[in-house]
Image (cartoon, rainbow over all chains, first blue to last red; front, side, top):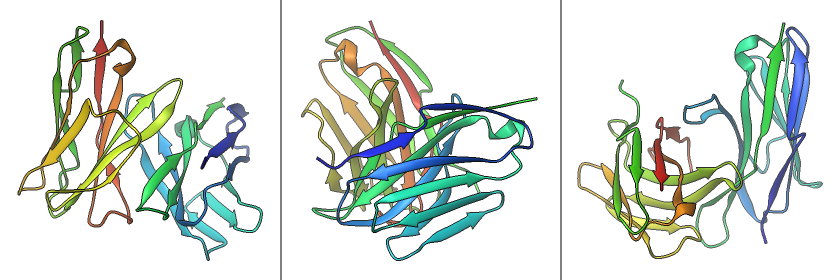
Length: 113
Length: 112
């Protein structure tokens, strides 16, 4: 079964600190891996999209990395802000039998003063 | 440019009833996908429509169905509602099915 697992499940950090969220997947073959940010009560917003051949992709203070050999991805947040408090979801697009999306259960990040 | 809109935003139904949710994609987007989000299961893919045709389907029972109109607006229908169908239903639109997707705010469905 194709799966996407994220860790940690939740995380609390102080404003200004950096943090790294992890995503391990067993989906194969895949076309791309995405990281989304979802604020409470709102739909997810795309942060990064990486194809299987890309190693890193940045979007402002967000940097995603991908290691296709170990089937791991990480999302690094630099100089965290209170507005970074949200759920971060890793999504892998499975290409076997159509473009089906497999979602991780997310990491709940809380940034405190 | 207006974003993805979903109606209604909140809905309460009783078991056994059926419900129809609506999604209007961003202008120019022909792909519309539907997702179910619950605290226990997270986000799960329901189905994707492109140019009025269902292109992909997730692992949901036949009670869940959808359609897309010529103006790319899409509806999702759930028949014979069960308590477990209580969830946030999200719609996302895109120019192509495997590219960037833009999510709407969702419809919160509560089944009692």
